[in-house]
Image (cartoon, rainbow, N blue to C red; front, side, top):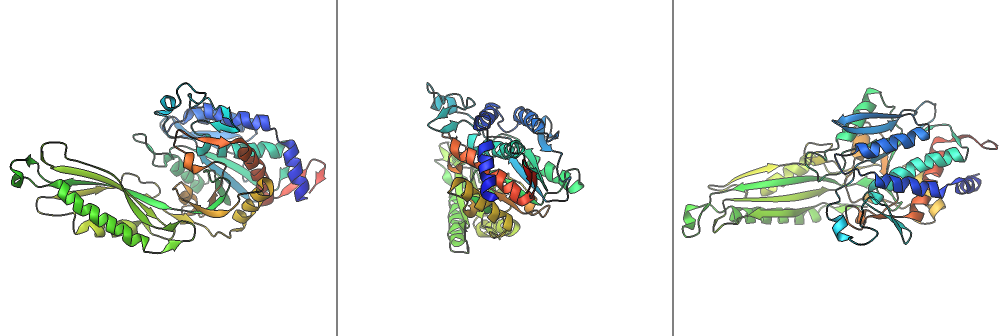
Length: 422
């Protein structure tokens, strides 16, 4: 039956329509804060699939969209989730000026790849999930359980006043209230090259401001050098990082670490009176974010103070936690994760490896807040996300549609198909 179903899905797939869906999705500019443009397109596409889309703002003029026709049966409910926003396109057109890639929303197909902002991160994943639903309908597959969808904004960071997972928070609130049925399993369609990630890192970002007292360079003893104090803090941060790298290691994601990402101070012919630095701390699964913050503050505490020096620390990137994003994992042997991996191997012949995400995204909202197992899986290479090289391989994308469709049938069960009961 499995081989027959795979052939039926392959024969039923409308590849031209699947490619057109993704190219149109890329054309809908949706840089963080402007998600509505893409959400309106998704709502229309979902309506064509009889998914009865619901649209509601999670913030002023910034909507989520989800399918309301879910969990109507006694079978399990799988939820596909993806973020609707992309990072900015500043510099893209200048980088590709005079080439067919110049327009970041034109979605040209070049050497078997579709180019454009959002192609990889993560409109290919969203379109693969919707394409799987259309493929099952076209193949005449009726499910015992339900497949549902939720597409949410505000996952990406980089635009002022955004990037705090406001869309995910709104979605989870609606699930907790019962407005949206609680899923039994979540597939978040971040790009994984069609591997299956059961774990992800956590993080916090810290901005440190060191304040001393400026003074004319000819009378330096009248000042308090903020750069000297910052040097001591940097040394403590790097030592803390070395200690972390000597600690426990996760099987997929390695050890924890800390990276200084920016420093700014001085600029006048005078004793620097102020200096700022920024850093990001990676947490391996199993670490507690509160404990990680406390350990970091203790590590720099002895050197972050001094006569005439004041130090303040802020944590600007709160997600599911006020200080940042929690790490999370489910068992790498979770049956649904293994089934999805097997489906990818059967359809695509490669990939389908169980692993961990070297990035943070929004699965902690599902695993920790509503107790629902969740994984990441989608076509696309995270290494080209957010860059001028963002693109998606067409054959990988088309295979993802068939793999998702096959997985849905295995997870939800088949009631019947064209030609009779299963």
